[in-house]
Image 1 (cartoon, rainbow, N blue to C red):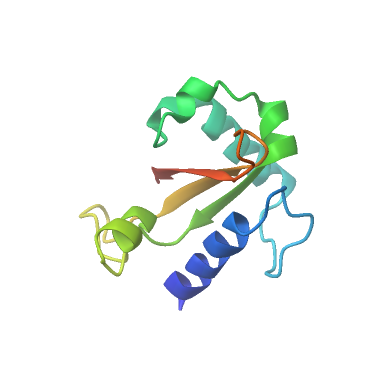
Image 2: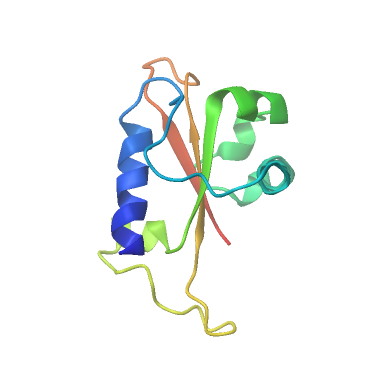
Amino acid sequence: MDVISGLMKFDYFLGHKYKPRKIWWDFTLDKDEWANHLKIVVDQAEDFTAGFAKLEVSERELQKHAMIEVLPFDLDAVIHRNSSGTENDGQQGNARRTMLVVLYQQSEDGRPQYFTKAV
């Protein structure tokens, strides 16, 4: 069920031209966790996919133009390798999780861009 709801969130993010004001699921992060995720995205930008580091996005820009979500599965494996995304990574018996960053209003065609990092 986690994979289905995660893919629905992913689709919801990509279906918007601008950063959504409201989401349909319960937002479970408190302000400290949200701030921690922002720091991780800025400090570890080179670990994200598809040239995210080249964008040199600041924390302020992320707050204005990005949605950040931690998905409880490996998004890359589900999308590109036709996998369930829930296989264990061999560390402590935990399945891989994905930090998803969706940027809005950053490309000329107006489409949102997404970047991922295994966590």
